[in-house]
Image 1 (spheres, rainbow, N blue to C red):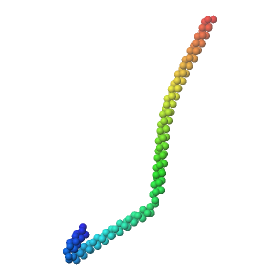
Image 2 (tube, rainbow, N blue to C red):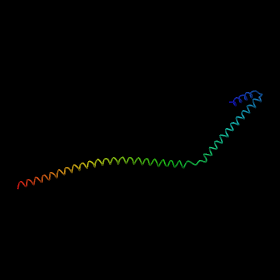
Image 3 (cartoon, rainbow, N blue to C red):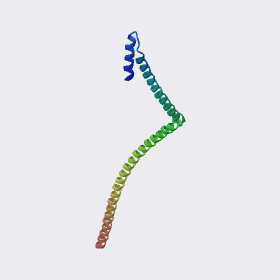
Image 4 (cartoon, rainbow, N blue to C red):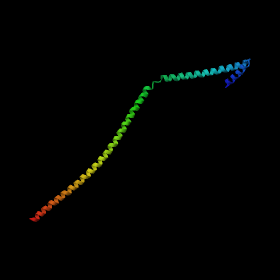
Length: 140
């Protein structure tokens, strides 16, 4: 802001043929100070940049680490896909097992029913043979 004002004054003095030495000297001094401050800031910024650059330069190359990470992610993705497939297959097998269990239960019930019928048939056969024996005894 001061520099702007000083430059305006310098310009106004330049417009007149006679330049006021006092205004010129104070403006020149202000410009010199401002340039000094700017140079100092610039030097500080350059030093900070170089320091930061050196840190980055000393840092190891992250490429192998990142490649390893990408490879691990691919392995994890394949493992998750395989796990999903196995989980789906597990569900299918459980359903099949349940179906077979129901079928086995039905077969066991049929066998039990058949066994009952066989017992009844044998009882009828024995009763029939007993009746034949009784009839034969009565006829004799």
